[in-house]
Image (cartoon, rainbow, N blue to C red; front, side):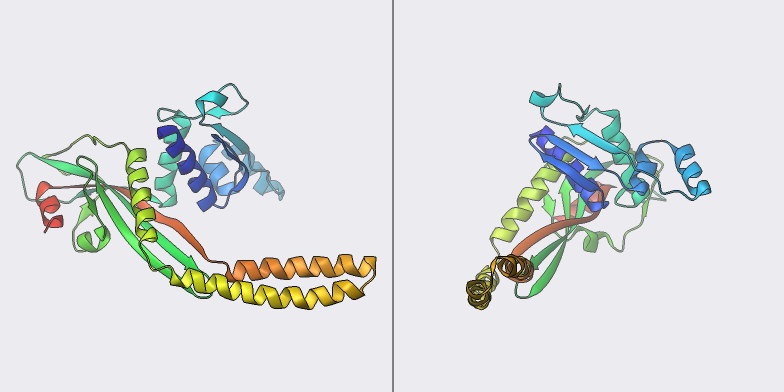
Length: 275
């Protein structure tokens, strides 16, 4: 399960950063990097400096990751939770502003107290069909007991945080691993989507079928009358219009991660979440 979560994390990471996904499936991921991600991961500033100075167009690297143990001997980089490459990608999230590490500001309190780890994920759920609707959610997961809060950022918006651990504070090691935590949040999101009223999706699909019927009838008439060359051209136009119709009307639900991070808060703050 952890290896599957790693594969999904990598896919989301490269997709969100506009990298070209060349192969994805069964524990193998092959990606062509963008210049930005190449600069973050490949450690070759001399190459990019030379390319810019000479006015050339650079060629970002292509990477292949193997997360399926059964394919470990195949060509590619074996990736697992302890991989230096995976932790390099974690660090790059800080540079990209997609992941943060924050500690509750407890200035003025000189007593030794722990800080509790929370995994926070801010997501946008998109419902696309005849009409479009977006829903944003800020989910916080208590990494010790699994408790979830569904409006985390709203709850902490008036609190102060800092990037260094405050004096007289120490952090508690999470019992729930980051990838397991993300999997819990993903499952919760899927359950949330399944509970939503799906009448919009049914209406969109019915509208798609109605417009497709009109499109089919229109092109069927021309296909019957045209010669072989004309039929090929008409068929191409038909498939193009059908593809556009599918993109416009077929119901689709997407989940996009906006950003996230680890928030360390006091027990007092945790108690306030439960009220």
